Image 1 (cartoon, rainbow over the protein chains, first blue to last red):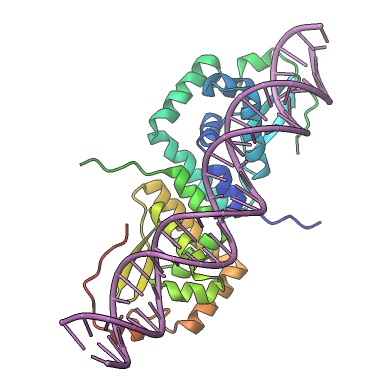
Image 2 (image 1 turned 180 degrees about the vertical axis):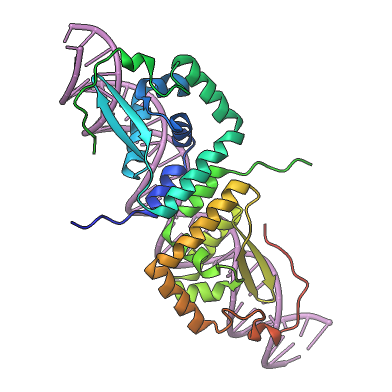
Length: 133
Length: 133
DNA sequence: TTATAGTATTTGTTTAAGCATATATTAAAT
DNA sequence: ATTTAATATATGCTTAAACAAATACTATAA
């Protein structure tokens, strides 16, 4: 079973959109629920879902369903150079004003930033998880 | 006089195209004439010019006219993160088979790869140069 | 059945290719 | 010198394809 080749063009295309960069910024090192993205980016949910699907196809994020909710997180791309590039990109968000505003908005709607275990989710029992795509 | 902000989306879009990646690979650390790109990529000249213009607008390459010829080279993006990303990208070309094939084709049509001074150009007197854009 | 998220469809916009043409430079001819 | 031709490169224009947004609809879980 051969690994399918990592598509650098798809990768860069995925990063060439402000909404998708904002989504990556919000994920940072945490796992974030779709509904929080909708709150922070202040747009409709299908649009967020479509951009998340784009990032998924590019091998940049993964999804995990937990009950009604789907959580997304950044995954390390299989291509080592893409992984390095993603690291630098995430680092670059620290000097971007809007990205920092987004992060504080997320901290408001979602009190679990910075916490190793998320209080809200503690009250829900763990479900048998499955991955999309 | 305020520097205009570096456009990360434009930068990533510029990198999200195989032809443009091939052009960057061919430039590497050298300054290359448009006619060599046309020879190596084996496509029409307007297409090459268009992609080079795209890279120029994204702040990734610069052009220098010397007589009838225009030479392109990679420039360090003003955004430090973009510069780092470009470094990693160029490094990634070393493990890409087609990129290496392109480089050897270039070495054939253009004997000056690896040489600090290009023999062909030595026979032309230096012109007052100007930059496009 | 209600909340959450994903998909399908339509529409408008962006992008790329191909072709033709314009511009810049040099060389050659008058 | 001035015109003409040739070469190298850039740019308009048109068409086709890809992409994004909005809306409506479907699927899943509680």
